Length: 401
Image (tube, rainbow, N blue to C red; front, side, top):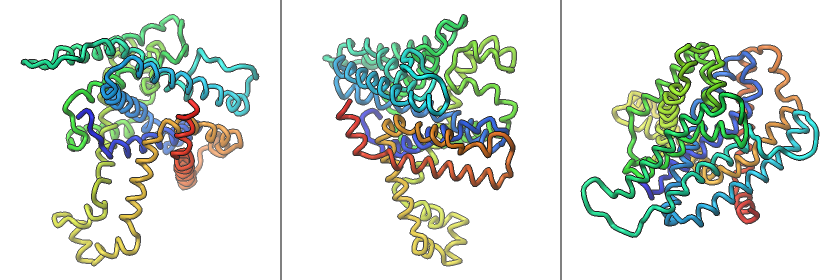
């Protein structure tokens, strides 16, 4: 429900920003031919940005309503994202030149296909909400069918979703390419506006929906199992123009109607997103080991009580303290996710420049070696999130910008 504060959402945002960092660390080895890296990368990319953008729309709607849908507050948001984009583009340019080659000079602020695109997305998605500032809100409507103004707002958001889906055809003649990241702006816009629509509804995040979680889990499992045959369809994960999707070796039907792929992708990505939210919801009020070992109806619980390990588990390993610390860290990363997003990429670029991936880029390695490197990247991603997910850095950015 709009206006409620759900602790699980903060943890989920923290989990998502961790996946953003890990996904970028996996990017250089995604096409190395080693299944562990490729399936992990594409599994993350199948849902992490749609989920993040969906929540961005959800929280934007809440803050937008709280501020009275004022144009002044909206313009302050737009100015903030514009400054952040300009700063991040300027910051990353020397790293791009140093790590990937190229000539010096000035960054090309009009074209973007890397990390700063998300800031342009927030700018344009919220700019399109400007007409909502002029909807009248000074009357209380009593009658059947709800407030006509609320319905009008929903119709407008649905119109934006409809237009963004068809906007994928705008670059058939390569007129825009990556101009102002419009390919991704249009490609991911439906998730932002669906998040706004959900924020208007009576949906409660505290109620678990097992059917939706099952759909998401099965979708992810089938995608990973049949990944070799589905890899060419993953172009849609990047929010690209439809002409790029049509060039892939996919079914002729989808080559002719790539918009259907994007329509199918929306429930696919949101289903997987909810599946992981559902999993994280078990980190709720009670320690996980008590949920598993403490249930009288649980087979593991019965075995644990017979062996006398239900008490020893907590005493020896302090599992509950570990879970509490994990919950706090995820909540913290979720709260300061934008700062982590802004500053994490130079760590990956420098690691790549120093040859951190060279051992895995040319030859396939044994699975134990792959696993060790994967765990290293997970640990590296955690360290980056811990380093950047700080209130001091967040406050500095808010104060300076």
